[in-house]
Length: 335
Ligand SMILES: C[S@@+](CC[C@H](N)C(=O)[O-])C[C@H]1O[C@@H](n2cnc3c(N)ncnc32)[C@H](O)[C@@H]1O
Ligand code: SF4
Ligand code: SF4
Image (cartoon, rainbow, N blue to C red; front, side):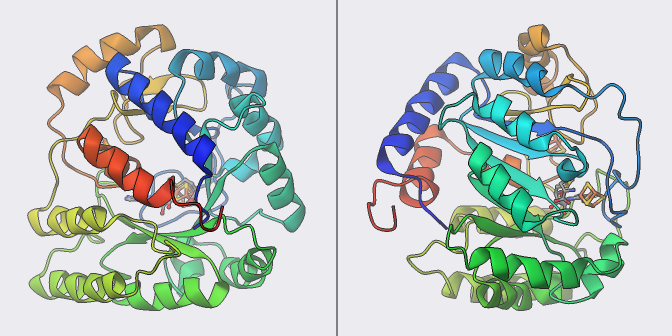
């Protein structure tokens, strides 16, 4: 994974330290639409939705000026459904290198032109969902032809050499046996890889959670093998502590200590603040402090370990160390 150059790393760390002390979020996820091109089995977002109340691109500036996050996720639903997604990214970046901005997408609507336009607007990382290393991906996402499209496009764009594409694979009971094969696919396509963990909170369905001893043993065996494949290119984007916590999350059927609403939050398509994408307590931007008091201070939810949580449920020194030594870097190689 391309490391962030030194000057930018320092700016991110500076802003992150200020936000930590000022109790502003480090990461903000903008769900720019609720609509989606897919109907994934593990998700509650499938298909078309009312888009009439979506924020307009210029309205994102107000959120950025108030929240001043270090990292932004542009997500959904499917963010590429918005024709004005490039303009949204421009508004979020406001002509600056900060925040580090990640587009979280299923890539069903991605093209080479869109990829280049989004890079030019300021996307630093493209997170592409992949649940299976073959056509079972189409079945799981209920989108015929999606895997073939990715198989054509991802390696082609990777060859442009920007090293900014990360496959994002959500571990479920259906694909736990594919953890290694998905890593092989990332290598074959010349891109990076990040694992995430299924939560039953979105749909209420426990069928895709890892429940049995043999599923947990399979998870551990595959993650041991993944650990052995790390190298200096940082292509396995999860920190080792994150994969450790993923094992604990499945083994204990939850992971306490969530800082949703404080260290990270979601801005919904129509502009409400929510603590996370699976807690539907809505607040106005002006009422963020009330969200922290009413939600975060009382929160006992341990029902997910998705990536936005995994970045941030750590002590500040640990967070800083992992980001400095991994994602953002004082190491000048590959800059
Ligand atoms: C909600 S989607 C939005 C962006 C885009 N539509 C996509 O699929 O990448 C973001 C990520 O959440 C993951 N996800 C969906 N349902 C989930 C669940 N129940 N538990 C954990 N992750 C989930 C998806 O696999 C995807 O990688
Ligand atoms: S995971 Fe992403 S692609 Fe699948 S239904 Fe949810 S929002 Fe859509
Ligand atoms: S653990 Fe935290 S981020 Fe996950 S669903 Fe619960 S409140 Fe939301």
